[in-house]
Image (cartoon, rainbow, N blue to C red; front, side, top):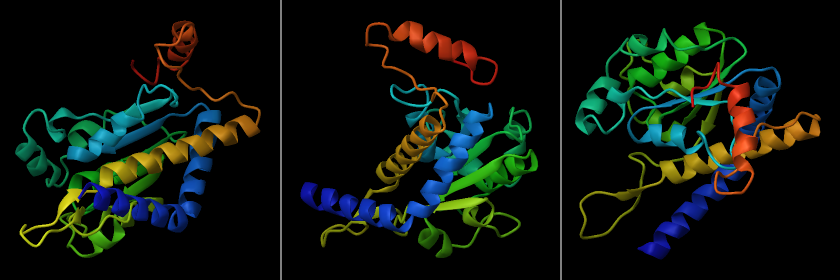
Length: 242
């Protein structure tokens, strides 16, 4: 199954690269514009989707003005089953989103593969009401196969300014076996991480092409990196708490 999983992931990556290139290019342009204009890129996800918000946060080789919205009851360590219950609550997002420092100069990326639960939809709607440009990373086929749990009946892909489809299958699992009753081996974390890092790579290129020095962390294990990184931490300390 190892070779099968690698093959399925490679096929999905090829599909995403081809089908979502235009959307990812636009996302990169928006990210570059936001950072060049002094804004911040926020990210949000519930459950396993929150892993992707940390993937690009305080990351060697990654952008500095990255702010993950980490609301612990919606993560896994305080209770995985409970986090799923909270994600399904309409209006729950207001308990933590109203206080977030999201400005009209900012951008928010919301990650939810099923795209059907109320919290990611409400996070997108609240951020838009604050003036931010909102990008959703989701599976349109998965979302379209399931009814929305939001009172508006909107899915995430219907509540954002720009959609990037991770092309995950319904249920996210890629593999099957004749002696296993359910599909297994998820795709969304691998694909989502690649999408985010590709978008940020292109945004860094665009900033450089615009003669704007991209704010990129060096690995803390490289000599001289501490000084480089501290200058960037100080620059963004009012917006990104490190």
